[in-house]
Image (cartoon, rainbow, N blue to C red):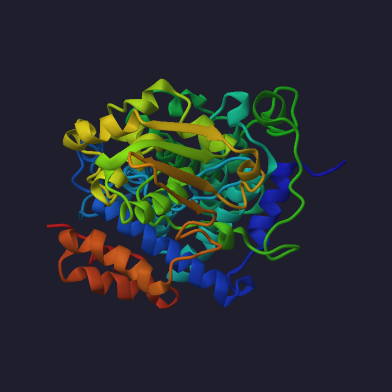
Amino acid sequence: MAKTLARRLAEYAKSLEYKNLSEKEIKEAKRRLIDTFAVSIAAFNEEPIKIVRNIAIENKTEKGATLWGTKIKVPLDYASFHNSCMTRYFDYNDTYLSKEALHPSDSIGGLFAIGENVGASGRDLILGIVLAYEIICRLADASSIRERGWDHISYIGIGGCIGMSRMLDLSEEKIEQAINLTASNVITLRQTRIGELSHWKGFSAPNATRNACFYTILASKGITGPAPVFEGERGFFKQVSGEFEIEKLGGINGDFKIHETSIKYYPVEYHSMSAADAALILYNKVKYDDIEKIDIDTFEVSYKIIVKDPEKWDPKTRETADHSLPYIVAHILVNGKINVDSYSEENLKDQRVKSLMKKISIKVDPSLDKLYPKAVPNRITIYLKDGRKESSEIIYPKGHYMNPLSDEELNDKFIKLTEPFLKENSKELLKMLWNLENIKNIKEILEVMEIR
């Protein structure tokens, strides 16, 4: 009888060791952790994050794991949720694009919580990150579940539980049960990312990580889950994804997928990243009040996610605005920048931006559509009142794995986002993260992360 997918993934997870990783994977895992902490710390004082933190603090414990930015410990699932919410809040964390588009670093809050709890080393965390990314991205390659009405966070939960299981050094049997429990329970409606977007847009994946953490703990103590969870009569294949195969896995018969994930240069939904680059180029060539009309050519996935909904043309929330291609382009053309403050209530009411959005037309260009998901192409053409025309087309935006941020640019992002919160500890934390493989216990990292 053929092995189930859950069993094959469990065997792979158990077989993968730190020594199987090259210097390339080790460095990329460190870069992703640096980026994750940068965008997380920057979100510390945002109101939805404070609400989550206050709920978590009501459940303080001497065990568990630490709420990032504090010295307070809470149960592992609460810590996983809070820390992952910090990571996801600004929509500024890394991205993977394939049949499903998602953010692999949504899993890191859970990996770190488990690792802190058991006294994991920096090398253990690196292995957990590479493994979680590998599974998350391979699942994203296998099937687009959004087209079947489900949110991509199922893949975050499954990959996250496998990474956490490996950090706990569970047996193949217990890893399989963690997968069974997680895959059967982390299924969420795609309505999360349609229309006017709510806080849950950024909290859905953290909730999958929270649940994966809980299911992994249950499996570690001997709780079993539904099987075969993928192939069964009412399993994941039939109910959620359709049938698929995962033929390649990093280190066995393919390169690790972490290399194909992209670090964000701006806090925008990733399909608009190249449009942001193009708009910034055009900002230096035109004045927004000289614009007659704007044509944007994009690709189908971009159109479906960040264009087609009426709410994307008049965003009322931060979550909708950072998923609005017309808002992002208009805001840049008016202000010459896009940052975490660009989605404030004041900016969302800016009549200059609203007026310019009314001059924008967006359509799918079949020639650009053919380039996705390897590229994220956008073309902006501006027609000026004096008859002139300016155009800019970007295929691989800054930060894309084909056009990656340099280490210096990543360091700049980290310092810019964390220094207002950590002061002199910002550079110390950055130095520790670049030295992650030599840290004996990742609890050391938390000592310089407290926000005062």
